Length: 224
Length: 317
Image (cartoon, rainbow over all chains, first blue to last red; front, side):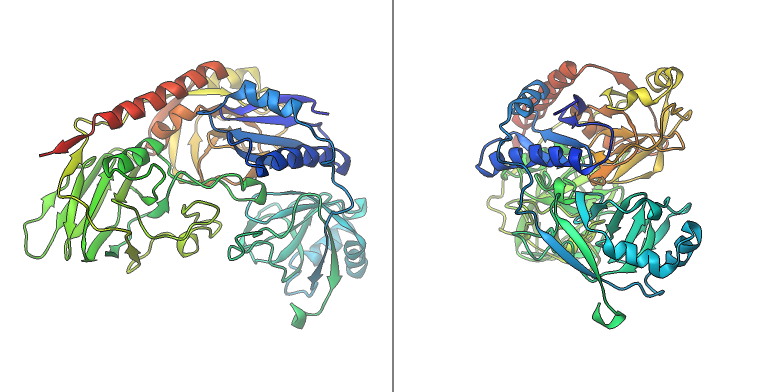
């Protein structure tokens, strides 16, 4: 399953599951992530400081006072992953989205560059059932896929200094939602009012988990 | 016991050891930049080892004690004064404790030839924690007061009054200074040309003023990427040295983004990070490659050194 394990720091290792970015590989990452988290939730693995899944890798940061790279590599290779696969209890979410011009800052250019009429582009986005590969960059920020090939686009040449919170954006085969106002270089196609991260909810502040499924429902401006 | 901020300073935040096991939600660990100084501060005050305190960079805050009698310590290489309307002002000595009475002011003017300093209080500060940490994360709005930097007129509530008139001091303490930092190879070292690898481990890099709690930007002879200047995003850990398309390395620090898509040539070892973050802009630094085993040994030696320092703390008669 793991192709290679290397040190990412003297207090961290990274398990490589392959070069490609696809759901099949990501599900293996999430299975290992869930297995380690399950042990941790039992109060074990006190020496682990962070377990971080990404598209096709899993990183483990550990406390050098209590353990070292070799021990963590052994632990990761020998952990029981049975029954920790992503299964039917995957959560499904529907996010409202408004594609009005004032929110969809890059939809016009995108339509021109991709040579797809605006409505067709929107239809294609609405049709896609997105899989959450990972949360990263900032709190609650999801990386979701996969868009149909005809919607593949590159990032903006010059990233925006400020992207409004709730902006829904695409690049390559992925779709993201900006939880906060932040800098960003993705093509913005709409706006949602979904709160992806809530510090006032200490039990479960982050709405999405890796593996969750998200689709969008079109609404008008007043509803968001 | 209430302190009022008369002047906030340049980048003043609340910090403890950091927030762990939540990086998968997009929350980076944060926490004190210089663990050694953080640890020393709490030891001087006889506090629990993870008691939250105030971190400042370059120019620190000016605070007025509105009420009560408290004990504080400032650690680092710091120039500060203790002032009041009635008494003559005194130049403070860092790395010792002081009592402060109602109406007196702590004025932290500057860190000397270093970046970070710490202001801690006996018993600690009353703060709400989030995932077991009070660390402020300005960029993501996490921590006390929505993670904001400490602002003018903000009030800080302390947990206790000064418990004894006796003070403590660590004599002859000096911040370690060095220009050669140990690193281990990064996962994408082979993205760089042989010549660039050689240069990375032999030539100097200048610390730029685009350096903060998130990362330290360096300039030097640009590193040549022979594979791709983008990778599929993967987790980041403090100390990682990533190299974007322009070839200038960035060392990622406590408030780093949780995942990143630039290749990582190397990673500064844990025991060198405290010294690294105290390096001021315009200084030249070098990188020396060592093995993971060596890095682990150096880490334990560093912890021993920190603990040995605490044992040298004396009471002031």
